[in-house]
Length: 199
Image (cartoon, rainbow, N blue to C red):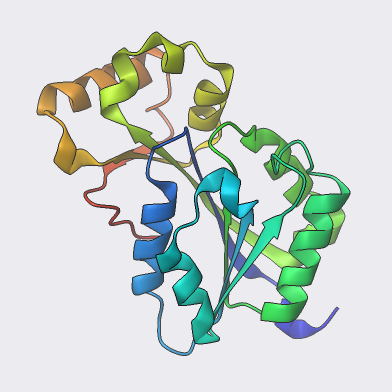
């Protein structure tokens, strides 16, 4: 394995549908140090709504995007995901890798795929970021959904996204929900406004 493909800093950016993952990634790209090559692995473009801004950034020669064909990345965490990942890494030779599973995907399966021997030396798994829109915490369709709760469970950092769009009471409700689930004892909770995010 070439030395340029070892220990690539890697973050998973997950979150339920509409949590602001693509916006957060676009903002991360704005902070990318000049000269660094970044790679982004996403589900099929139509599935996650990769917008024109992200595709435009990929034309710079420093940002490379690869989609995982065949639906949900977690469901295809076998061969299709591995093939897409390997092709992306070989082509991009990135300084950083961002992985954005679909909002309804099971991130545990993605993490399991990345924990295999093949990726142990290739990737340096950093924080898994889970974006949550605090306004949704009152909606049982979210809080009773197994994927929503799994995304929170795998997070190293929980990001209260779109904080500029809701009230302090809604953020307090999110904190109370996370405390009730025991998710704030070993996880950091941060807020994000208009997609600003730092990793």
